[in-house]
Length: 411
Image (tube, rainbow, N blue to C red):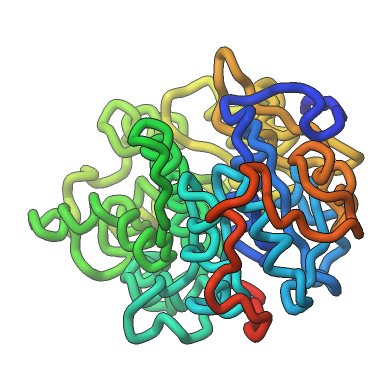
C-alpha cells in the first residue's frame, strides 16, 4: 500500500479537475460517491451538510465518500438557507443533488433558481427512478432499480433467487459513474458553447439498463439466453465461474479463450479425462470434474500454481485481504490515509495525478475556509445580496424559495 499526503484542501493543485468548483447538497449513496470521484480528481468540492447529519449512521470521520472535500453547515429550512446555497451555486461550475424530484425546488435551490444566478452552472440530479415517469416520486433503493432493468435478474444461479451484488451495480456503476460522466460532459459543453449550463438527469434505472447494452445485442443475435446462469459470462459455463477449495476458499475462473482454457485444465490436472468444452450437453460433467479438482488443494496452493500462468484464474479475496494482494500492493491500488486503508483515487493520469489529500470532511468544519476561498460573507455575517458579479439579475430571489421541502435521505 501507498501512503498519501495530508495537504490542506485546495492548498496544492493536483488532478485534472483542479480549478473546478463543485457544490454537493448532502445525501447518501451515489451522489456523495460521484462528488468524491470529482474531488479525487482535483475538484474543489464543498459539501453542504444539514444540521443533524445525513442519516448515514456511521461516524462521519469514517465516511470515506467525503474524503478530499470541505463541508459547510446550512439549514435549508432556515430563512436564509436557500440564499446561502445560491451564493455557493453562483460561484460553482457544478452542483450535485440527490433529492427526490421536486424537493430541491421546494427548498428554493432547484435548477431554475440556481441557473438564474449562474447560467454557466451544470446542475447534476441523481435519483433512482429519474425526474419523470410513473415511479419518479416513489421511494426506492439500489435493489429495486436494478430489478426492473433486468440486470439483477441476470445474476446468480438459475434455480435460486438472483444474487444481490451489494449496491455496486445500481448506486455506483449505474448511478454515480453516469452522473460524473454527465456533469463532466455538460461542463465541457458549457466551456465551449458560450458558457451555457444545463441540467443533467442521472437516473440509476437508465444507467443500469445502459450497462447491459452488449448483452441486449447478444440476445437479439441469439447468442444469449434470457435466463441467468445459462450463458458464457453469467456462470453458466463451467470455465467461467467460482469454485470452492479444500479450505473453504474460492478461486475465480475466466478461461474463455481456447489457449487459456488449455492452460487451465493442464494446471488443474484434468486435461486427459474431461469432455470437450464445446460439448455443451456435457458441461455439467465438466463442471463436476473442475469442482472436484479444486477441492483437492487450498486456495493458497492453487494461487501459487496459477500465478505464473495465463489460465485467467485468481483467488477470491475478502475486502480486508485485497490490499495485501501482491499486484494491487505494487500498483498502490489501495492506500492508507489517516489510519484507514481505502481504495486510492482512480483512474490514473500521467501529467495530473489525482491524490488523496484529506480525510472525510466533518460537517461544518470548513465554513470559514470556504467563505474565504470562494469570496463569500464570513460565517454569521449575513448573505451577500450582490454576489460576486455585483447588483443585477444574479441577485434575484429564486421562485419558490420557501423552505417547505425536506430532503429525502437518498435517491
